[in-house]
Amino acid sequence: MTYKDYKRPGVEPIWCLGCGLHVVFTQLSNLFDELEMEPIVLSGIGCTGRTAGYFNLDTVHGLHGRIIPLAEGVKRARKDKEVIVVSGDGDLLSIGGNHLLHTSRRDINMTVICVNNSVYGLTGGQLSPTTPKGAKTKTTPGGSEIEPIDAQKILMSNKRYFYARTTPVHVKYMKEVIKQAIEWDGFAFVEIISLCLETIGKTMGLKKPSKMYNWLEENFRIVENKQVLDDFELGVVKNG
Ligand SMILES: Cc1ncc(C[n+]2csc(CCOP(=O)(O)OP(=O)(O)O)c2C)c(N)n1
Image (tube, rainbow, N blue to C red; front, side, top):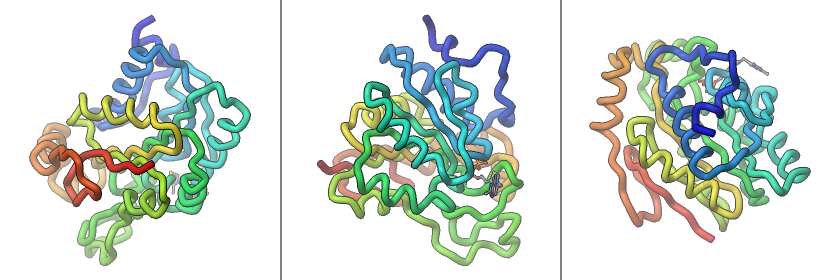
């Protein structure tokens, strides 16, 4: 078996050329292969929500915002299996935010990977909870006037937590922190910052994939042993 065997045969990802989701999918396949694991993968809706369906594994595609409770149900029924959610910032932090609060508080043993592209990508680039203040989106043509959510702080409202932040350009690091999240005995959340090239990427002048990856590389840096990550810092914060 190789990492390629984790892709469902005959179903090709339709993500845009150069989208970070391709990197996330490949690195997850690599990691599953390395760890010789066959997890149950679940996704909600949106571009990121297509991820589960591309795996040749037991997968679930859920309704908008409801993937975390579905994953909790799956975990309760199949304690022998690793449960991994891959979904977008809109799905997990907007309509699904309530479930994130409570499932993380119950510390259910699962890994949630949030691909944060800073907008609602699939529907054309509307404001999402993680859109940076000032950013122009389809629904904020004059620039967003509100501060984005910091998912890290949601996790930190619990006594026990695991939160990691990475990008698709920090490829090795991404794999390393997802591995740590899978090995964490409890609820683990990994945020992968990867701008939507076709929407907010365009308005930020980063439409070409190479520009977006250069921007991620130039602006984000990996830090160690920090209790709270500042904006543009990548790392792991955990307690418990
Ligand atoms: C109940 C409901 N409301 C609205 C939608 C429309 N919808 C489809 S994808 C999406 C946004 C997804 O954004 P995000 O989770 O950030 O994923 P991305 O496409 O950016 O990866 C919305 C609002 C829906 N599918 N279901």
